[in-house]
Image (tube, rainbow, N blue to C red):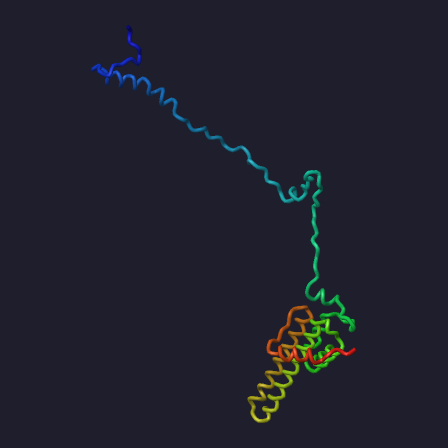
Length: 207
């Protein structure tokens, strides 16, 4: 019976030689089956298109038959001085920001304004009455300290200097509080809390 190509006998003394010959015959075929890398292809254009700002804003196609507004305006809320300036206080008729700023005006103008506001503004206007009582308390405190320093100024030059410095500082602070209250910003004098609450409670509105 004739021998086939792959018919080998392991006991044959020539088996190692025949095995090497068979391996040499099949090696080129195996090497040819190796995975080859893909050839390099130079990019010709961008994969995705980039829209400009003008093109993007002008594009507004409907979604599921619903029209999408191109420009959506949100509601604007009034805050600070705008809202206070437009709201008139009951029984007085003046804007809220003016009434909250009047009690902090320097000298006796603010003190008299605070007393009048507490006498004529109803209890329901808590913000206006609070600033009137706090401004009046600030003026009372400034008046007491100024009187003490002025009396001591007749004895020592240091007290006379302290009176002048305190008077200038008090006027500057009252102007700052007046501006802040007029702008609708919070004004809180912590050292005058007790006197503020007492004045607001004791001075009741008339009528």
